[in-house]
Length: 579
Image (cartoon, rainbow, N blue to C red; front, side):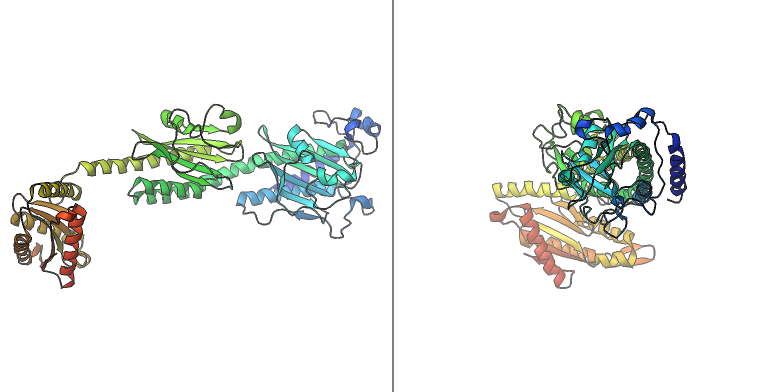
């Protein structure tokens, strides 16, 4: 702000110095039309000389002490700055507001006005949003947002994209023409000019006055120049916002990567992605579409930051006729400054979606080097919101997420094809229970006995904390070796956990299973683990369950064995229990 203040002062000095013989060529002039009361402060003829010659009449920078009381504050409080006090602002926004207030005060101190203000334009919500205001009026609106009104002068500026000036406003029209007053005011004149950001109107800079002929060509020139200055400030601080965003993204991306390392399922990845997007990017709506386990493309995450809901989660997405499908097929992002015209004949997700609005949109594929897994879509209600910095960051996020999903699916595929446990050589849990289910069906059909026996190393956690992971893993390998030595060749042996194994003893009743299990318990107890100079005795607890033909399922067999194992633990371990 300290940098901007000297420029604003110099701007004011140079402007008023040039007012002596300022030419209006190149400036937009409001049309002179006696029928619509435009510039009819005294009479149109009174202004015709300076409209033709382009020579303005200078006035002092600050109103003189004896100025017309019609331009003074009859509330007795003096002019004040009005802006929404509840708005959460970033540092760059606060700096912009300070600069904007200086501009508004330049107008207030150089022109006899009642109120000077800047309203942002939001066409999607059909609202004007107050950014800042300097006013003498005690009845200026307490609302941040004003609804569009066809009769208002603000609406006329927004629709015409040109300055609008009115003098001698009838008292009966003030409330409808100037909706930012909540009670009648004795306003006689209005001047408003559009503020552009690129090709779009982003705001309206306006002022009104108690004087019926307050606004002449001088004021129009001043307002046009200050509106251009505001446009430049918007552009400058949008660049600063980009820098702040880049810093925020860099910081959040590191945490996002750490979070992804701990994810164990695609759903966890989606939740982590949504959390990162919400903490890093500014959007009004966000959705992530991906293939589910049935191979259907659906919306798996949907977030709305407005009162208007977005696409529901679980909604089917058309691969061929949607933006999400298009970016997935091409592996290229898509940016729309405005969805109003750009979406003609196309859909965000599917033809039945009930989404409207003229928003800025960015769609980015989530893919790895080999496969596309889905697409992210972000929308903002302000047109042209997303910049090259946003797009680059989203592309990096999409690729990183795709790599994590690829690793998870690869691990899942590896697990489904896996038969043996790498450390011990026995069956892994999934394949082991496949065999249990198959043997149960055969046992019920043929009519033979079988038992499921679960073996668990006692005090495994204690060994791990005291001697380390290596010794604890050696205990598991040691138990697996003794189990393979003592079980029959046609029994099935699988690893359930780091400290737990299971054996399916086919053609064996509970008594035979108990005898074999007791032999194994004694063998383990008499065979300590030897590691360097360490000799660690190890014991096991064993639970046995036998086939119940009325509940012949793998889950029931395991639950029964685990209940028996729990009783073995509760009696001190190193024993065998049958259920």
